[in-house]
Length: 161
Image 1 (cartoon, rainbow, N blue to C red):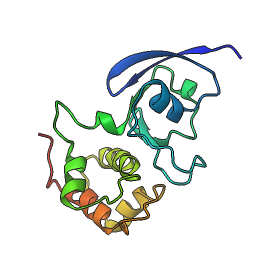
Image 2 (spheres, rainbow, N blue to C red):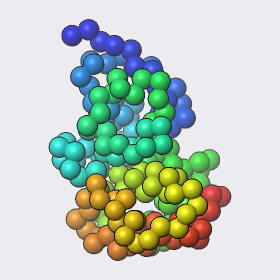
Image 3 (cartoon, rainbow, N blue to C red):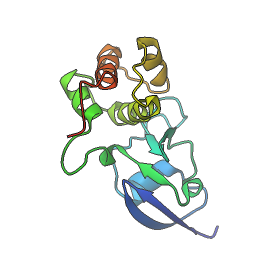
Image 4 (tube, rainbow, N blue to C red):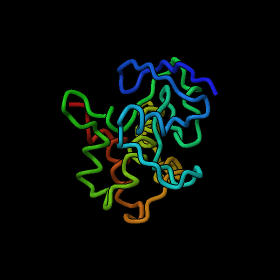
């Protein structure tokens, strides 16, 4: 199979990568570009550990062919910090103990980021917050601390630094 040129942005930087057209986005992010924060967990679209944001929408990168992201903007967990400063959701996760083993954390952060951006300042109910992370599995925290962190950011308790 002939390789194709993929041009896209990842975390604000432009990349050109020659790939097999059947290569998954998760593979390109981790194996070709070295952004290892994106985890490959179940590889069946069930766990959400591979979640990244594509043009502002959270997607499970194990379910997307990389070539589908041609000319798009992809953000991985590494792209959340700006100028050495953690994003509000990253700080809230730390302050609220919203991680334990950390395996699900990158995907949770990416889903939460997309959800919070989608809100446009609206404060969601706990039910909406829980619904927003339904596609992400965490076996360690019981989700309560994750919900508290998302809620704190939604309520404006954490701002960009």
